[in-house]
Length: 263
Image (tube, rainbow, N blue to C red; front, side, top):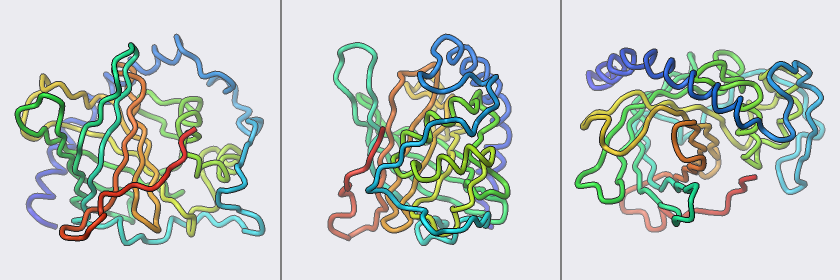
């Protein structure tokens, strides 16, 4: 393990708990004021009663038996992998959407514990210089982490609402609900699911115009390496969609995005 990776992990550890507490209070208050339509209250434990709608064009699970093994290795989920793309920020008022360019670098991956660490370089509107943040991620692997977040203010209600915004989650939804967050089809599934949580700023202060109080629901294609994410933060504007593609210097078209289904 490199010295830079050890330093990054130490920095993340010191910031994790303080940000979790602040976000949890705000998120709970937000969900109480704005319940999700069509999804049971968090007091309702009948998770198997959610309606299931699976578009026919998505991956089918017909004939597959349940296997709770972690996702198979993916060539894009490795130390040193970089991604480039944008985060689309929608406003509550009539202001036009903003697209923030961003570069993501995976600094380290620990598949045994279902963890990864990385950094993000943000190019904010009117910013004089990029803003760099450090983040920690969890891989949904049925062993260390499942689809139920259980922290950062997230509830079973909000988890299902945001995971379901990824069209590729549709075929898994019923199984996840029946198994309380685990899923028996992840080993060879077409996409890998994660959560990313920014922990601290590396080159500036908190007054830079970027909030890191929330976290991301992440969906990665194991075939193309495309990453799509939904940023959740009750203290920020409601719609942040992250779109990334693996970046290889000198390869033409490495920043071209294909169609991706959000619901």
